[in-house]
Image 1: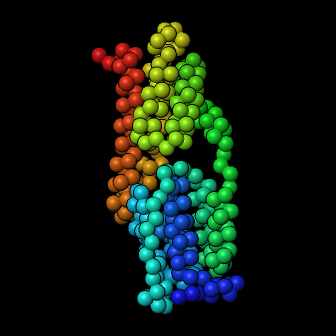
Image 2: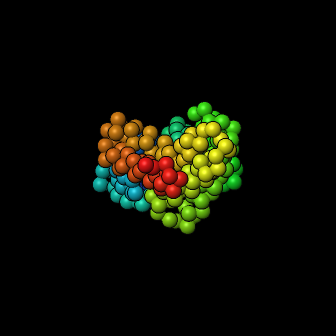
Length: 264
């Protein structure tokens, strides 16, 4: 069944469903929690005269789109999500688009055009991110009362560890292995404070702070939000994934501690 939108162009339910599930996958990949995904998609579907029911999972999203006036006109799609690549600009702008779609009754063509503009935006340069993350991690070391030398070690260790993480991710290596290797490289680099005595008076803080850039804060927060809001299955999956990443970070640091002789 086709519907008439603002430009009086007939749009098939398959076209609308394909656009909405693509938007939901982008939100999931960009770091949105389940309730936000459901609300944004429901708003857009309402504009087009449909109701949308979503089942959001860690690796896929299933959506059923049904016409409000003709329940027999429905379609169900399942789409795999891409690996997590946090981008809150996408989340914010897509949320704004969903409200504009609802308030201004935007057409399918206009919504698709605005969505494509959002996802085609250039991301921040990987080198800019690398430098900023290194400074942030060094600042964390200072907050934990590390001295200037320790902060310098953390800055360098973060540069190396985060660069290795970027490279391994670009080769599509398993994310658990990537976290383990990155944690090991960053912590062993910061461990120079133990290898060369006198460089810093707080080598322990340097080693501990060197892996903070890997802490999966977004998955942890989203998992708690999902569980609180009743999306138990998705929240649990996200929580298990976050805990797995934390274990990988601990394994990388433990290997460093063995090499440096800190484990007795």
